[in-house]
Length: 62
Image (cartoon, rainbow, N blue to C red; front, side):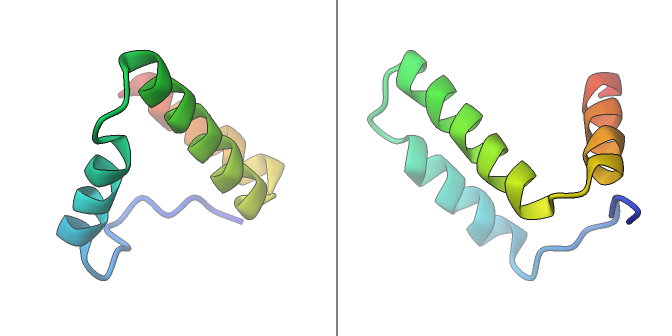
C-alpha cells in the first residue's frame, strides 16, 4: 500500500474543526494524550507496516 499524500478529505475544514473541538477544554497533558491515542487508533486502522513507515518518515521530515 502506498501512502496517500494528496488531499483526501471531503471537507478538510470541518475535519480540522472537529479536531480542535475534541481538544477544547483539555489541559496540555490531556491534549497530548488525546493526540497519542488518536495516532494509535489510526495506525491500527491503517494496519500496513510499510504505509506506516512511509507516514512516519514523512512526518519526521516535516
